[in-house]
Amino acid sequence: MYYSNRAAALTSLKRFADAVRDAKRVVELKPRWAKGYARLGAAHMGLEEYSEVGCWGGRAARGRRRGL
Image 1 (tube, rainbow, N blue to C red):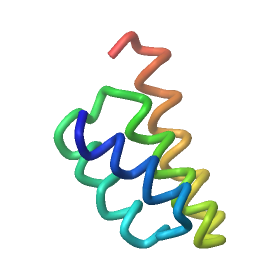
Image 2 (image 1 turned 30 degrees about the vertical axis):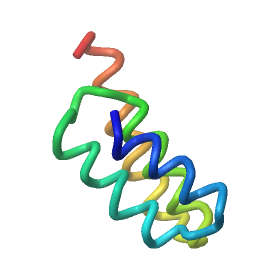
Image 3 (image 1 turned 90 degrees about the horizontal axis):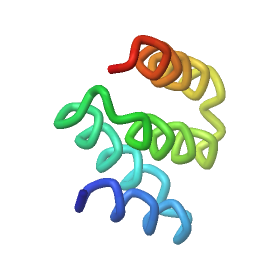
């Protein structure tokens, strides 16, 4: 998915705010896809928004356990 790949690229370029924007778009488009949440968590880590990382990581884990 375009937004996911771009979020990963932006994270590697340390453009974390832009990466968060793209990763949120991934989650909107494919809420059951764990990689979107992983991208979002990585971007939040880069911004040192650790409370957000736990929030999104938990959503990804719940979706995976339910087989979604």
